[in-house]
Amino acid sequence: MSIDAHLASLEKKHGELEAELRVVLSQPSSHTETIVDIKRRKLRLKDEINRLRPHTEH
Image (cartoon, rainbow, N blue to C red; front, side, top):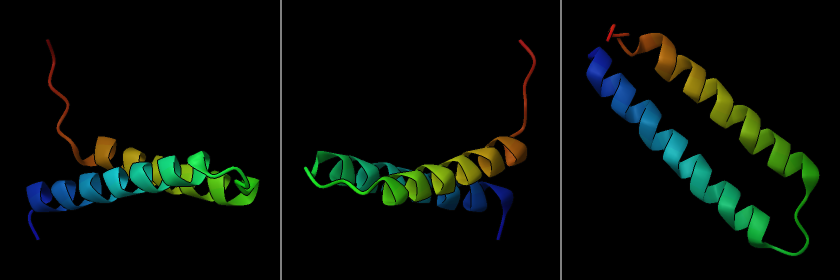
């Protein structure tokens, strides 16, 4: 898998977790541990995305 394809896959998963988090947060009986788990998984993906994405200087 190319880096671009891997990045696209990670970004898609990150978006899916964001949607999942919105659903969980909209429920009146949101479970804190579920919210923390989703946020932790999102952060791991974001860190990997940032590590793989080429940094450009302005």
